[in-house]
Length: 230
Image 1 (tube, rainbow, N blue to C red):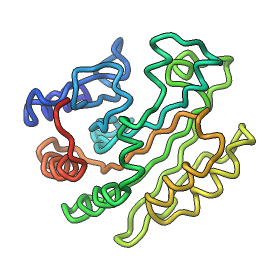
Image 2: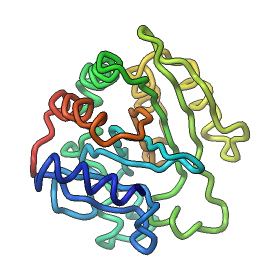
Image 3: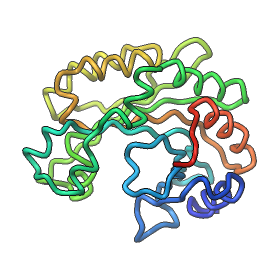
Image 4: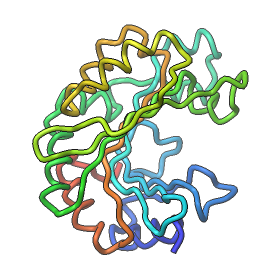
């Protein structure tokens, strides 16, 4: 089973309330996929289920995918066109809502552990919009990743990008690397004065090779987040 089929099976179970979208529509079979609680696209503002195939295995990363967009200042730099306006975060974005109610993010992690899976957290940071990153703008794209596991009481850093090319990010990376819960990670981002110029993804997930084993965990996650069809 590839990621496209895995996602399709999940969609059958959850019904038409969730729209399946691939990251790479030209090679969808092995792309990262999202299940979005809306037919709207782009869907940066929504909490999404994601399915990411793990290379060389029959397993997938499955869980919550949350995006933190830019401020309107980016329009002054990259132009006020529709694709850029879609990347400007406002109070309707799920990141903005959940940053004010971080207990729900902690609840997602706890519910995963209680369901018998091993939760992980990953923060991804890019110095460009998704559009620019996809174009490898100026040949300088660097996606920075920090990955944590969860021990039952705290998150613990497992791995991070070693070399940070962007000096503005080094203090932030040092700070978030020391955090012991998701709320602390989000707080660090909120305190980062340059955050409006960086695109960030927060993933809370588990690894699995089974659609059926994923359903209960994802159902609990959606209930905690209050995800409904838009």
